[in-house]
Length: 612
Ligand code: ADP
Ligand code: ZN
Image (cartoon, rainbow, N blue to C red; front, side, top):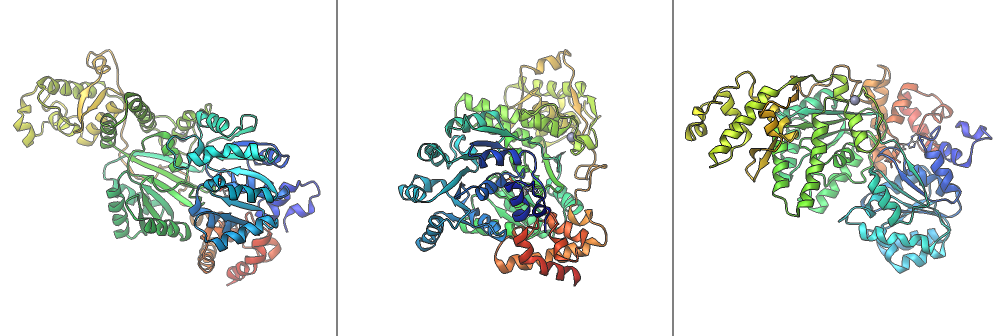
């Protein structure tokens, strides 16, 4: 069926890749990692989401004698992971707190009888003596420690359980261990290595680039409308995640999208656990649902066909932003990461930091995270280049697939407008009675006669009405950028503006201020963009109806088996089937993602669907 069986040179690992998983070749450093573990060595693997980490332990578990033990904190997803493996013909099971004793005993005896290739365990299981002695009685091929950053993050729920994993090495010194994470920073890697005794392991650090994700950051005007334009214009019918900061805005946005004809579900910590689980399950199982969520949602969600991640509020750090956007496009097909960001975001976050609990050092850390995020938002250079540089991967050049590459923003000399803003803040500050927010300052510059202006007699200031050369939104852009550059600060809980040490240089004319010109169009796709639209648009005209038929068949099959649609086949696989339209099983077997087991199980149904 696949070329493997006729190729005597193929390694065992490659044969498994082709026969079981239906893929032609390894990606990136998968081969080296697998070789290392198959040979009995330890490995520490840093690879971005969607990079293909799972195969790095699944294939060695297959090739080596015994059962591969996979430690994962994501018990809500274990059932899906195991279902996905079983569809491939892999013998997999799991042990966690959701099972009743009967189910657990069944899995345990399968393990002891050597009838499993992979056994998934929640980390807390390994702190129970009975589990350890169970493992002693079987044959273990390897330990895979997934989401290994849990061991390194302070305050992480699973941290104590993960710290206890350092005993694996002492108890089973000859069993190879492979730790995996998508968290990129050097500090995290060093801590994982030391906490899990993996200093002597081979470290594999993949590029963190996600070339199929198009990064776009737009000025926020009417965020809900902008989101709607994005969805209507580029992501009709696609699955995606919309992140909001607060529970209230999650609810509001979900309702708004539903009223506008999109299927959207809310997800936040204020919903009870059952509703959350039900919404998550629907998002995973059904095609084309939108999850509107706080950052409580997403860890370990390995749905491959999330086509967009939209942020309606500014993330608190670049790490968070990268992790959240990384949930898009795991299948390697084009996906969009879209963030709307405005003056209010900056004011609000600066305010939150200045009033946050915790000591000065903690506040400084939060501020540094925000600085880096703002620098990304305000850059006129390639977003991807800046992101990768942040994660210590320098040397990349313009990517051609982010908003700043696709339509380079202009910069302009904003020194005079900056001086106008700063001197207004300075004059108000001199009154010492009260500090004012951005809105009032802009009203003064525009010479508006608001009640507040009359009340404080601000129409008598010399700066009153000196700023009619810019529109309100443009002034907001100026203030936002001054805040982002540290030329203005936010004071107290009302978001009042005040000068910083650096403001004086601008007021005194010693410092030029370059500003980014706000694009007129906001939610429109960048002109030269590769089509953000995925499968159907990328297909030929003939293939589109086939693809739709295959999707409908897949939805029915998934429903019947109670598994997520992507467990049956990924979009990428259906797309390839639709464009090649194979007429025999042998031909179908050469499609990427069609392994032996799936071919036997679904092959005929697919041919029938194509012929219908
Ligand atoms: P990660 O755990 O690193 O986020 P996964 O292991 O879920 O990534 O893999 C991401 C996607 O890429 C999956 O759909 C997987 O089947 C696919 N994939 C992984 N390795 C290969 C390969 N060598 N060839 C083709 N597809 C692959
Ligand atoms: Zn770029």
